[in-house]
Image (cartoon, rainbow, N blue to C red):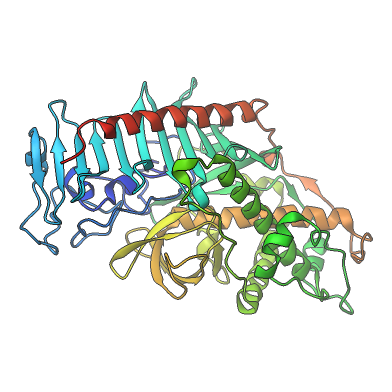
Length: 506
C-alpha cells in the first residue's frame, strides 16, 4: 500500500533537533496514506521513537514524519539561522544557533556536537544515530547489504531491536526483539495477498497470529484474524452479570511480579460478571510482562548503562479500571457480532486492493489504550516519551494527517505527564488496539477452559470453532532468529560507537 511502517520509524531520526530538519526530508506522514497502485511489504507494527536531544526546536512542522526538507529552525535563532542542507554537505565545521556544531568529514559523514564537543548525532548515507549523554547510542538505523538494523534503548535500559531483511519470495521479513527473550518474526503469507503472519515468543512460549491489511480514508492499518470464534450465547454470557457476585481464585497473588508491582492495581474483591474477571486477568498479564521486561533490562545492563533503572508500571486508578472494563464489554460484544456472520467473514478474500473498514480503535466505546512499546509524541510543542504500560484515552477521531488526539491517563514518569494532550498515528493506536484484541481472545479461551474450576461459575458451552483464515503455526527457529537479531544489533551498536569516536572533540 506504499506506506512506511517500521518498528522504529525514520521519524525518530528526523525528530532530532537539527539533523531532523536539515538532513531528513520527505519522510512519511503520521498515518501515511496508502497508494492504491502498489503494494509494499506486509504491514509493520509501528513502534517507539527515541527522544530528541534538546538542541534546536523545529519550526512550523510536527516532529518526526511530518518534517520536510529545507525548513529551518527559525523560531530559535540564537546566533542566527542554522546552516542549510547544501552547506552541511561541505567538509568542515558548521556552527549551530544553540552553540553546538555539525562537523562534516571528507567522506560526507556529519556529526552533530553539543557545546562541549560531545557527539549527539550522526548522519551518513547508511547510518542515522542519536547518542546519549553517556556516550553510547540511544537509537540508530544502519543499512547494509539490503537489510536495515534499528535500535532503541527503552525504559530501564531495555534494548528494542528490529531487523528488516529481503524475503526470498518478495517483500520483507521483520525480526523484532524486546530484550533477549521476547519478540516476533513477521513474514508475508505467500498466496494470500494482504496477509502476514507473526510468530511471537513471550515467556519462552511461541505462538502465531495472522493479520490482514485494511485501509480507512486512504490510511493503511491492520488487524488480527481470530483463531477461534464462539457461540452467540457464550459471548453474551461473558458480558452478563451473574446472579450474585462470586469469589474466583486469581492465581497470581503469590507470583514475583505481584510482590513487586501488586500495589499498582487492586483486583476486584469479588466478581459480579465474567468481564470483571477478564479485566483483572488482562491487567495481571500486563504486569507480568512489565516485570519480565524489567528483568531483561537489568540482565542487559553494564557499567555504562547504570543510569537506567526499571520502574514499576503506573498506578491503575479505579476510574481507569472501570473504563477498561467497560471497553472490554464493548469489544466482546463486537466480537460476538462479527462471529455471528461466520468464520469466513473474519478473513476477507486475498485481493490486490485492501478492504475499506473503520478501524476498531476509532469505533464508539474504544477509548482506553495501553502503550505497548515506547512512543515519542509532541506535547505543548515539545517531544516527550510515552512508555510501555502508560495508558492514553482517545479524545478525537482521525485527522487529515492520519493522527488521533489523545490524553495521557496515567504514566510511569514525568516524560508525558498525566493529563497531557497529544496526537498519535492511526497505526500506533491500532497496534495498541490489536494487542488488547489478542488479550481478550486469550481470556475468552481461558474462561471457557476454567468453567466450574476455582470458583468460576459454569456457563453455556463455548462452541469454540476454528477460523480457517486465522490458523497458523509459529516459526520453529524463532528463538534462534531473535538471538541472532540481538547479536546483529550489538555489532551495529559497536559500528555506531566507532563512527562517533572518529572526529569528536572541539
